[in-house]
Image (cartoon, rainbow, N blue to C red):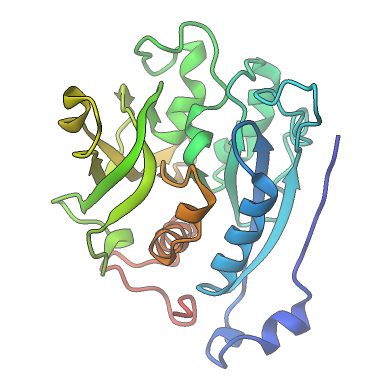
Amino acid sequence: MMTRISCVVALTFAAALPAEAQTVKPIKVLMVSGGCCHHYAAQRAILEAGLKARIPVEVSHVFYDPKPGEKATRPALPIYGNPHYADGYDVVLHNECAADEDSAEALDAVLAPHRQGMPGVNLHCAMHSYRSGTWKQPVKAGDANARWFEYTGIQSTGHGPQSPIHLVVDPAGHPVAQGFQPFVTANEELYNNLTQFNVTPVLTGTQPEAKAEAERALKFNVAWTHRYGPKQARVFSITLAHNEAGMADPRYLDLVARGLLWSTGHLRDDGAAEAGYLLR
């Protein structure tokens, strides 16, 4: 098992920020990553740098990058068995791909902080993690294999081809999408939405250039928010960024940063960030 913690030194962090931002308390982010199908070392670097350029954060990492011969879809994340893994942090950012991790005990630990009110941000393959039972069939609240989907907000069981996604803001509007200009991504995966748990959509997407005509008409939520658990923890999820080039897109990083601000209560209902919490 590999565990690595990287924290920003307070004096170095403060010196790099505008004067207004130095008066606010940095958001302590714990980023969980590792597993199959992605270059997580590169993604950790992209996300940490992108967040620090946009909002006042201290970023720590806990991860496991599978070794050759190991089952990458069941990464031995150090948070398993430790329900207190997020103690001392303000938000957990999930960027793991644990598609075949079906242990109820592992999931108990992963969900424990969020059930106690810890905000969450979920990226891409996090939505396809911790699957068990007949997870390809629609689940309902309270089912044993619905617990992770209840946390992320949407049960997604698969995706279409890698093809550009046309993104638009949900007509109802959302603080996270304030100032967002619709754009077309590079090749991306459009995750399906099989079951929803009281989510508030942020962005929707279509793939009109997909080779299969049936896939061109599909429209799914790409980003959303909701409240989870008995403490109504704030959760923001976005299914984009299969590829590192898409993750490095400034528009994507803007969305993740604003979603993180919303989840931690630093984004007002009008879409404006609290003073000092948006650097660019």
